[in-house]
Image (cartoon, rainbow, N blue to C red; front, side):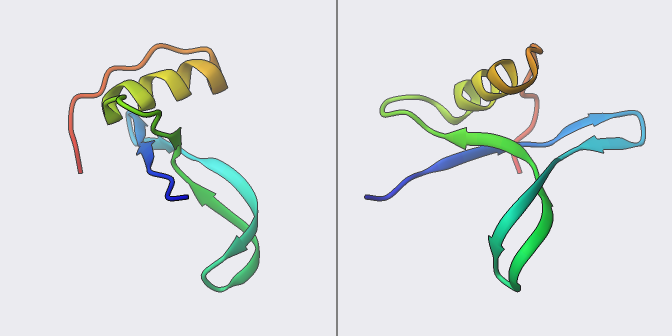
Length: 68
């Protein structure tokens, strides 16, 4: 089954919020950092996914104002 993810970068002043994660990655396994986000639910827009994930994980409201 293919899973599609949406990830969001949150900037405040000169800082960027990322999640510390431990697991397998392209260089083997160990610690790494990644943007917060999650799986896009069927029929859901990626913007809605990012807003939902930030609310679920951090309890905060975010606005998506740019796509990369």
